[in-house]
View 1 (cartoon, helix red, strand yellow):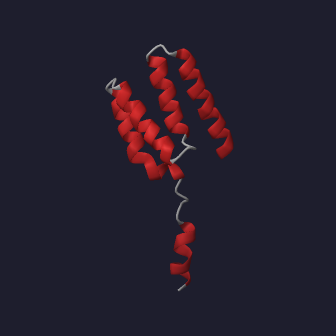
View 2: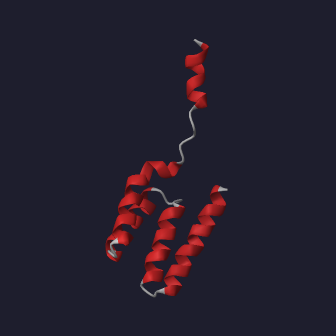
Length: 88
């Protein structure tokens, strides 16, 4: 049937980030609670499994910025920009 064959082609392409969305959600929850070490731990786990994660790098930048560690924050923001350019 032509319709059945066409359905997979009509489905949206799921971004790779959806694969680790639950981890990112957990990291954001830790971040919102000010649980910096837990946020870093989860983001590190994401990056181990998905080294191209722009979101994990941004979250790490935000964590270090919130703690006044501006050089570390700038490094993570820079890595996010590099990864974002690779995915463009």
